[in-house]
Image (tube, rainbow, N blue to C red; front, side, top):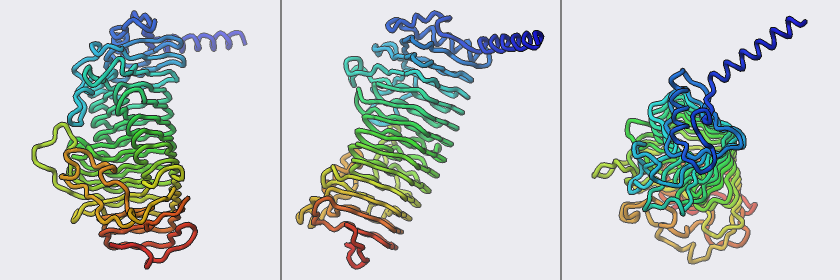
Length: 465
């Protein structure tokens, strides 16, 4: 028995030594971790040693605050932020490097720098129950000084992000450009201290999984983008997430030079969102297809679905000539509850293509939608609902405010080829003079089992233009 205990003890000791050999505590590389000293060099030295020795964990120790400027993640490195630890961005823009690529949106070079960067790295992880704090307050960063993103990864592969809390970026939380095999699980993002603080932006990425995470952002919580024609955004699954945002819960498109394909969003809640729950916009020449959105609950989300097919140039690398319009097709929206009883009359499912450029093959099924009502006869008689043409957009994005109050109280669907609606329930809190559903230039459609204030409506009662 004594020999067995000795052997087990020796094995545990050897395992502990082996584990320590693969751990790189930033304190051992000179980090002061006092919340004020800039420890960038120490953290980078730990990363460099880790990747040089084949990989392991960089330890940001619990109870410590480590302040850094730009650091570079590399192959086989796990950045482990222990419970109670804070990795804090420097408040000085000079501590952020200039060689971290660029923001892909036009007119926004003030967001080119970032705190955590990786280019061409493979198999790295950011994990732990600690916090990454961008320290991005207005007192530290403005558009004039520069507003660094928290993270930017370009052409990387096999990336994991687990459990961390991410707060206070000066700009977006993250930009993932042309990466493959991404898994995000159990993270929390709070981005409210500076302007347009997106959460997770996946640009031209493939094989993306985001799950069990919560978002509270000052701009779009999750974005899917495609800024390069040769880099599609495809095979994306988002599940079991909670979205709260000043702008959109999810935006798909806008940066859309490349294609989008095979996206599934399920089992998510959206609340207190200023603009739209699902904002799907194709406008830079790519093709968008094959997407399913199911089992979604929304509260105080004025446009549960806002979908546009238009022409606009958003990318910083946009050519001088305008993009052609290709296609948007095959979308399913099913099992959705949206409660906007506390909002104003500008609450609707709004889907619009352009004349001769239709969004095609849309299914809206099993939807409960509660609106406040209050639309007037004047609203109902509105004959001009602006198109998202270049002259209307005036060089900017296709936003809802450019159209204004819609002449429908629940669903305004325009320039669509192939529409199927089934088991849709619309309830008004107060009387609304507008028709509940308007089909404007919709071809090949079927509307079945639509209930308005618990009364079924028949096809003859629909407003079809």
